[in-house]
Image 1 (tube, rainbow, N blue to C red):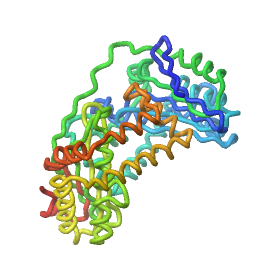
Image 2: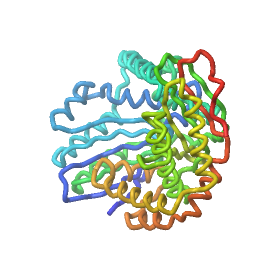
Image 3: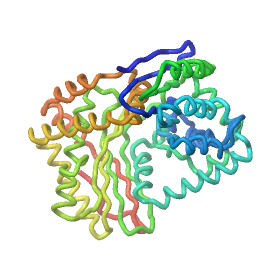
Image 4: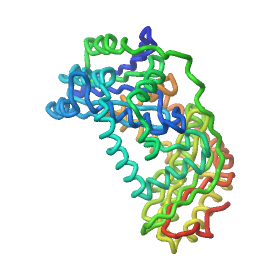
Length: 415
């Protein structure tokens, strides 16, 4: 059973106990990411995530790492476009220690100026690593092709130029604005006792409320364009994006099932047609991304330059067929069973449950039971899925391409 409580400062605690296991996963979720940044501070959410591991008033960066290594635990963090998460997974007997280290990082990181400059070099290497990885780079380009000048178009890592401007004061100002009570969720799952919950209550009562009302999330619209990057690469990497659904949409499961049949599994149409039957790709898949107010349905494929015309033609044929004819009853039923199995298997991990609970609270403020989820999946009709296919796949997609050609290839996707 998932239990929720809200502290006086707005921090929410989501707890799900399981006495049958010996691990505990703890996550601190903050509702801010690259979408909340101005163009000038692009990348600062991700940079703060790095800096919280670089030393506190009582622990050095090495001591933070050693605290988890010596107990066989895991600690990490990640930044997305709309949220940031700091998390740990440990044996139940070490839960109090894990929480103590996480809260030390969260509240008492010192942001030493020398460490700031050193970590800029590390993040710069991370940015360059993406630049050297065409199948990552093409997805960053796709955000620009879809969202134009919206902050959703900006890379989560930021840029070399913005990275160099970050200062201790800028970090402090940003955290005061966004690391505030109403934007913080602490999610804990596994084998823990009331003492750990009380430790969370006492610790996170320190979070201050925002100094001013939160600004409305920056708007974004689906404005499809084409983005091309010339890169010395053995393959051409292609992404197409169609409109999707905003997070929390009551048609979300319909889109999940549509995506599964289109390119979300090995039995999907894209995989079977383009890889298995035509041999045009090693990697071809689709996925959906949901944000506040907006979403995208994306297709990725990589192939050698000589086969790019055939690939774009094959992608067009598959998407046109799905749009015009919809899915079969068998595809829908297979997708439902696959989705239910995926959800149930995911619930066997404390980390997965902690993540699911934290994101649900942060973004949706609701927690459906497994029975409710299964009922929602079973309620998806073939008509709903096919209506989504007709609605979402009818527009000209946004396109991003990373390839070795010095000029944009004349054959580019169009339907």
